[in-house]
Length: 418
Image (tube, rainbow, N blue to C red; front, side):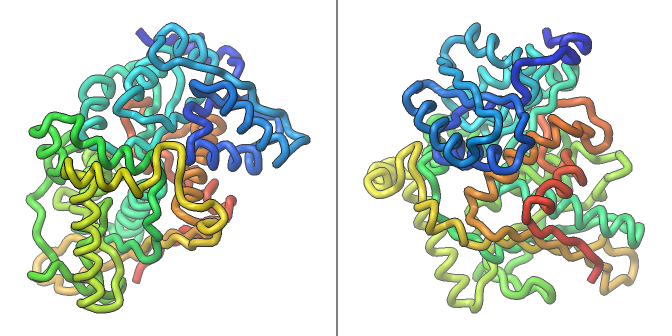
C-alpha cells in the first residue's frame, strides 16, 4: 500500500536521492547536480561502497565548495527494509543501477513510500515487467515512474511528442509518422550500457522476441507498420536527407514512443490512430549507409551471441567505466525529427513539422542533463502531461517544463512547421 497524500506532503530529509551515484553515469549526474541545482538542495548520494561514495563526495566538494554537500548513504539493495528506510525520506529518487539485477526493489519501494522516480532502464522485457506489475499500483499511489530518460531515448520521445503537437496545434491534423534522424551521435558506450545491452541472455527468449514488436510497451496496438526504406535499408527524406536503418536504439525507441502514443490515445494530445515512429542514422551516401548497417549488425552480434559476448568483454568497458570524460565533453549531440500529417483524400503533400535537439557535450552528458532536470521537474513542478497522477511513464510526460529546463541548461530544442 502506498503512502497517503498527507504523508507525502510532510517534509522529507532529502529532496533528491541519487542511487548508483559513483558509477560512470551516476558520477556525471552528481556533478551536474552540484553545478546546476539550487545550493540549498537537500540530497544524498547512495551505493554499496562507502569508500567510493566518499571519493565522489570529495570531488563534488572540490567542484562547488560553497554549496550544501550531499549526505552519504551506504545501502544494500538486497535489504528491502534498508531501501525503504532511505526511500521514505526522499521526494525524488534518481536510479542509475543495473536494473535487471536490483531495479525492481527500488521501484516497489518508491510506490510503497510515495516517492517519485526516474531512471534510464532500457531493457524492453524488464520494462514490460515493470508495466505489468507496477503501472496500476503507481497510478493508484500517485507516483510517477519516469523510465528511460537518457540520451538515447528522452530527446527522441520528446521530439516525437513536440512535433506531433505542433502539427495538431498549427494544422489541426493528426500525425501519420515521425521520422527521427540521429544526426550527430558518437557511440562510445559506458560499462553500464554494455552490461544492459548484454542482459538479453538473462531474459526468457520468447519475452525477448516479443519485446522487438513495435507496440511492446504500448497499452494498445497500433496500425501495422510499413517498411519505408528501400531494399538496401536506405531512405531519403526531403528535410532530413539520406537515412540508413542502422540506429542501434531504433527498436527500443519505437517501443518507447509508441507507449507515449498509447497512453495519450483518446486525450487532447492524441497523436492520431495511424501513428508510427521510425528511427535512422543520417548518412552521407548509400555506401556510408551500408557500412553503418554493417557496423550496427556486428555490434549487435557481439552483444547478443554467447561466444562473441565473451570476446566483447575483453575490450568493452566494465560497469563503472566509460569513454574518456574530457574527450567526449565537446562531442556535440544532435537529433532531428519530422512529423508527417495523416493524409486525407487526394492530399499528396501533407503538412510537416520539423524538430531538433542539440547539446554541446557527449551522450553521457546528455543523460546526466535529462536525469537531473527530469528529477528537478518532478521535484519543483510536478505537472505531468494530460494531468496523469502517476504510473510507468515516459519522458514526454514531463512536457514543456522539462523542455524549458534543458533549454535553460544549454540545450537547443526547436519545433516549427516546414
